[in-house]
Length: 189
Image (cartoon, rainbow, N blue to C red; front, side, top):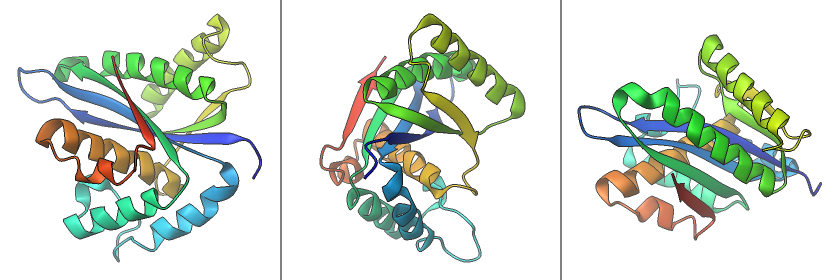
């Protein structure tokens, strides 16, 4: 155990039509020395010939297996949620990301990986991180970088937690989140 904490971040969006939907960012927080065994447990769940897990692509059984792996770890999770209209997703992302990075910094996270999107979007996120550093909203030593889910299975975890959260919010299905035994905090903006 290093005493150091890292986080992996992914988004989920449910915003269609004229009514407000949800935009959320989820973070999985871990001691980095535990991450490799978690990655191996997740890789074993990937159905062939696929190369990764993605909550929306999984069947019911695989989702329960993913939840079992996540629940068996010492991971904690922070989820930041905003209501959003389909055309205002980037604004909702900025608000959620600002709050999430602040929360992670307050919990002692020193490094975070955000699932990479397109280069221009990653650049905008990085500019916001620089602004947060400059304003003192997050510590100067808090490093934020981008990663691809094919390169790091730890990014599959916040994807799953985001999916579990949307199931609870949209469908009143709390079965998956309940298995995390309270190892998460949901922050509504």
